[in-house]
Length: 289
Image (cartoon, rainbow, N blue to C red; front, side, top):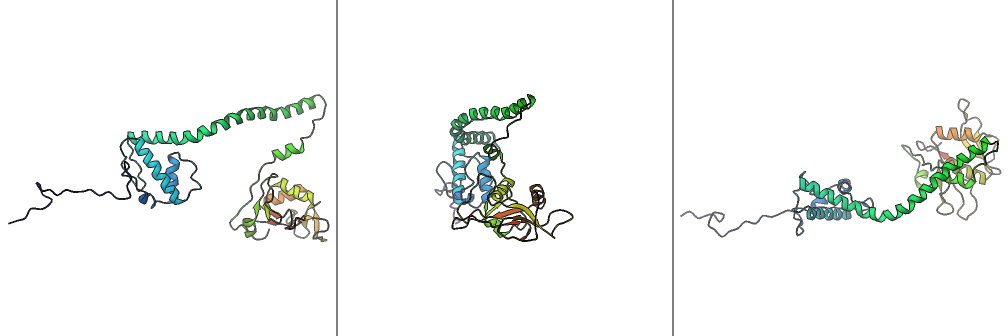
């Protein structure tokens, strides 16, 4: 006599449907193990699309947990759990999923915006007051010039505040000394410690360093190229004196410095705190300038 299959009708056998991944009550489609198989950039991209901030410094385990938590919140906010289309549980383009995504993104953006509201409210009047003050300065100068009076030159503090930050130049094969040096991009930057190697391309920073040592812009005689300055250097009294050093103007020095895309590697102080005269120009595409 043929036996009945245990899966046939009328039997007491039941089937259980197994779901993959580690499950969380109420969010069966969110799997951290599947999210962890994604690339870090993909995880960050999904978090940014959902309006989650402060993720640039997170490592992959933290990013996985954050994305899983965000997806669970979206699933709860949208009612029924959304159907996943990939390992990160991205929702299919349905009306309910789109609405839940907008609500979640609005909540994520509202939290940091609420904290920043007070700071913005205080900063706005200050900016409004500062703008007319900046515009009024040239107006006063024009008024004095029209009346025959000579306008007063701007204060040193105003020049310092107006100095723009200049990024350090990089190239295909930036020298090791540039990569290991502290970058100085404006007059406000200070060495981290005495003896620290520094690198800059900012004209005002270079002028200040030279003035402190009574150094004059110069080039090496015999290295000129078609009437333009050759190797750039400084004439510092009592330091590396040579008959081949020929002083030039700051305009010629900086014009050559910028055309060649150079950086200046230098020191402010020695390790014992004494003033340092060390410097050299560097081309980020070559080891020598």
